[in-house]
Length: 392
Image (cartoon, rainbow, N blue to C red):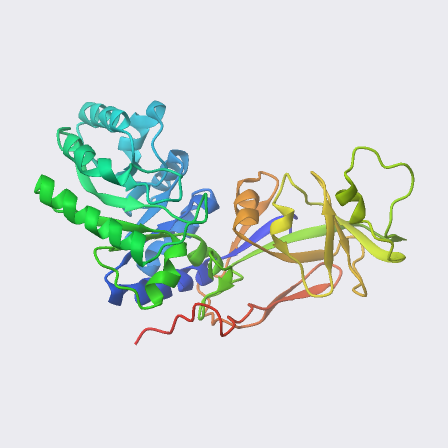
């Protein structure tokens, strides 16, 4: 097969989404499956829909349009603040958008009126992470203004945490969101359908026995796609952490010194310090680099160490593992590496796994053309992980 490639197991993604939907349901919380890390893949969106998510969220209207053209009929939410230049496209393809600016909502109203439709709006509230959001003291007044737009439907309020500044969802900020929802309803007389508590970072809070209050929706991407909780980076019990595997091909394999020689210019002392003299090593170069992924976000197979990366090359120390030219080496990407690999035109996307019965912990392996095999073994969640138990 072509390399580099991202192997995507749709059945594992569907499994992860289904488990999270089932575990959140007793808490009165529904799931919007987020596809922004997957370039709006219709196949991945379809897997989420089959798992029971209430809708699909994406940050790019281009991705939402692509999913619509591919036949995804689920409700669609634009989860990034709308660009004024795209308001006509947004009301045509998205059912709901997350908003913070009255002027932009006015443009959405005008676009919806031209299209003979209505558009749903969720007002995003700033609760400390300092990304997007209306200040809490202004939420009621802005909600009242939104109700003046005839082609806009106020669907609810929401927030986003742990994205820019690392502020964690907790009892205090989630309770504040619930109180704000009550205030908006009291001031406007309009019931809010959506109180969106945030993203995958909210899972520890919910499954830690929290009183969810009015929170009734989460926007989940990383936990569905990678089976992990992003605040601490730990795998979630019962979910697959290997639904995505990045495969790269060896283009050079040689015994080389571990330390460069000659005058080194333009590098800091700290950078030079990484070149410790460890004698001769088995160094291989893979045809993948910063144009294809986020190298620091790759987990290598046991016995292989990532040394460095350039725009086009990944340099590894393969130790005692034989990695001849043509061998394929398999890596597990984190969220940042997944985003870059999905959006790189140089990485082939290979969907697999439809129709197969899969179980977390199952060992699978794919043999490279030269016989080099790297097992793919999902890492079990340690006892200190967030410890989600199976439903029922």
